[in-house]
Image (cartoon, rainbow, N blue to C red; front, side, top):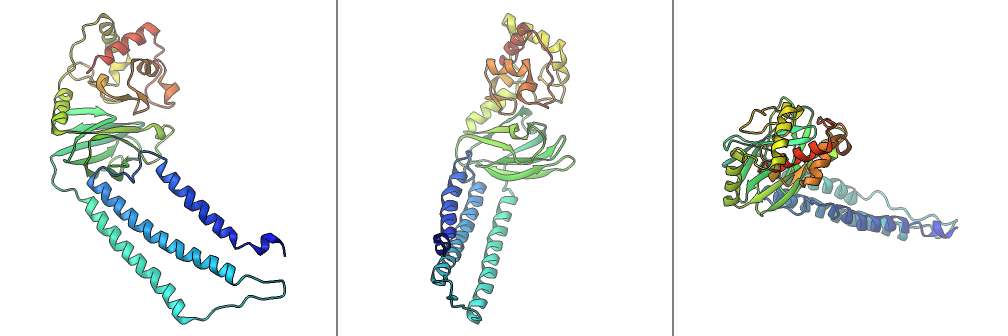
Length: 337
């Protein structure tokens, strides 16, 4: 008998150790982690996850332990010996039939209870309409007169309720640290909510494959104090300040004479199209192109110069603008704060 055959019981042990070492690294290495909740209902989801994983770990240890024990205890001693067999134990067979059924019932009860907890939001004062587009997010605050894109602001400690729909294909609205996944579907309205418990900036993303740029359909959730949120909404509801710099004025003229005006909205102007993101205060946003690039003049120039090089397939075309026209447009858009 070869040495490998004599020690084949070690193979399951090696696999178990590898899984135990790799799985936690895979879970914790990818921020933002849903295992670091920053809202009440996200904490409920993590609590359920922890219970399920603990039960699964206990089952894994018991099963693998019995497997390893059996592989070692009843291994073939030599080519002539047949290992002693164990079978026909009624108590054992009853136990391993009833035990899984009890575990499944317990997990079902815990899961249904958590689903009911996170499904119905408590009374809240902030309502947000979310529209998924290929490949960006539109956020509307109907009670505040605010429309923005790819940057969601909510006050800490307050229930935020969301009505989701889609302008094209099925998307999925997911903020790993704040709430579970909720589909946004064309022609239907779905709902979700969360109450953020910690101020900060949290990353969200589309969790349903929706096309070539699905991976770059992200957004930011800015959780801030009530006073900061009120200041932000007042600033967003107002028309942008009139530009005064010469280059920004040139960019403004170019914006309204080019195809830009046919796709975007800028409040207080004749630009009222709905195809692309609302640009009323684009200069004050942290990122552009659905959290693909930091909002800097250099990145804005790259995006305007050739958006297809950054997000192939996006609806924004390459207008083949001259470098001086790109710089003028950047100056104008950066001034919209």
